[in-house]
Image (cartoon, rainbow, N blue to C red; front, side):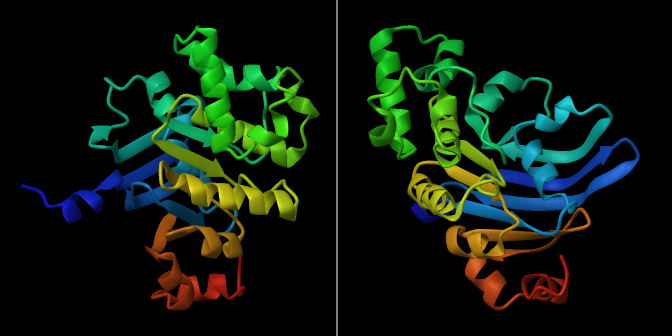
Length: 259
């Protein structure tokens, strides 16, 4: 029988020998990773290195790009993502995503949060009210908007809009939250709020974030993966990767010699 320790270190996401092609361009090359649950894993590396491409494979966003071809395996909780049996809509409910630019719907604050639950069959006002409140509280936004739920989401500041998008993702009860440069368009104060929010959420969700900001990766993440030219160069605990990298290319990147 598995011990408690074995259960805790069981990876939620398992990637094995993953290769991804956009037409003839080989974007990801033999990527193998295990990403643990209820922790923050950061992907770092220069522009075009494959980190956002890998992130988008985790909820099959790359399916929308013509000419994309994938080889290898990606499994979440033991389920192979690219199996014909996987319902992509259900997958994206379980693997939420927050993008670089805040992208609220042209609806009220309330209807932004209620949109996903309604799509999945929840119609009762009391249940929706509770979901909206819980999701906004989880995104540390409730106190700022609770008296203005019928206002347009576009009336919020950029940082508030991004937290609204996080709340919207949480409203459908995901297991995993993907954050693709989620703070790069925000001011320093809003960035700090999102970082603090991520730290709070990791006790309940598995978070995978792409960031160009190495200081952010060092501050927030538990594990860091360094990508270069579509390959994983190094993957370890964040503190170790930044203080004692094992690959000279990692050392060169984090010390600012390139990138």
